[in-house]
Image (cartoon, rainbow, N blue to C red; front, side):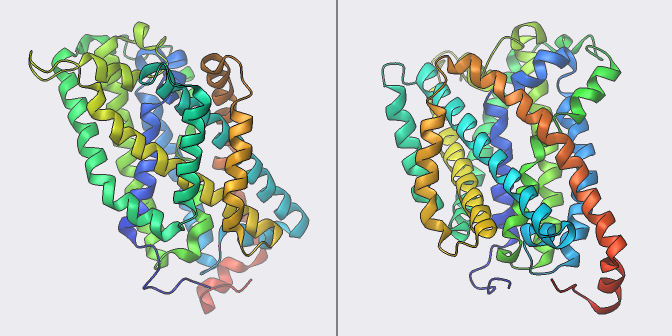
Amino acid sequence: MRTPSSTAVGIREYVAMLLIIIGVKLADSTPALYFDSLLSASWMGPLIGGIIAAIPIYFLIKVMKLYKDQHIHDVIVHLFGKILGISISFLFWLYGSVVIAVDTRSYVDIISTLYFVKTPTIAIFILMMVACAYTAMKGIQHLGSLSWLVLAYIKIVLAFALFLSIKEANFYAIFPFWGPGIKEIMIESVFKTSLYGDIAYMGLIFPFLASNKVFTKGTWIALAILTVEITISFLLFIFMFDYMSVSILSFPFHELTRYIGIGTFLSNIDTLFFPFWVVASLIRFSVYLYLNALLFGYIFKVKKYIYAIPIFASVYLIIGMIPETPSFTIYKLRDPLYQIFSPVFIALPILMWIIAKIRGDVRSETNKGSVKI
């Protein structure tokens, strides 16, 4: 059943969440995954990936519109059967858990190595997870409102940082234009399409949205903005550092903020950008924690799933503290996660639509409206 419109998530809040949870990836080690293989053509990766992602997103939207007021877990169970459907959802939950554990440790590593060198890593990690768990327990409506409230500030600061980097840019660094070659560009772009994979997880909150149009229009708006934003950011990273240098940087955005300045009187302004990045990061992992707890509740029929969030946060903290050399280990873990999820993100919505077509649900929706599950 859809949430009453007075408490539902509107299109502004929905788009804001997507722009933050996906957009903040350009400020972690994600760019390094592209630069390591695509070199000077790295900026094409998110651009081509965004175009490719439009295909599964198109079919995902079509499928979700067939089963109005139903979340994606119910749709998967309906289409694939109870056993297989629950198994697929459980694998999604397991994947999401690994991503949270790995990525939170990556962000803690950024904070501890670049900003708070003397602070114990475990202290930073605990503080982050407590803040994220507390925020996540407020619910998706609160997360949407918070995202919309801070979105403008975060994006203005990002645009300001990228603008300041232009004066230091070497535009010839884009050559060789095709980097390692067109074939390699296409392969890497396909296997990193899951950069936008968070959109699939947002199908879990479909009943919480004010209307079906929020999911449809909001998703397309967010995808278009994110594709342009991340592509431009990658371009400026190349212009700033050259592809040879940027390929060995773990966190290009944070290195960029250390190089730029405002005139000669204000040179080191990286601390100006740090608070906004922290806020965006906390929102991202708060949304992740909420979605993972929500999916857990759907799978195991737990109505008060919100109380599982602190438990999950504690487990992810313990898992995240396991790697002894996090900078190397976490980086090596993130690439396989992209490689695994990208084909699933591309193929699953298409397969869901084909099964719905075979079952006759597409025809039923055309003739009578929403298909009942």
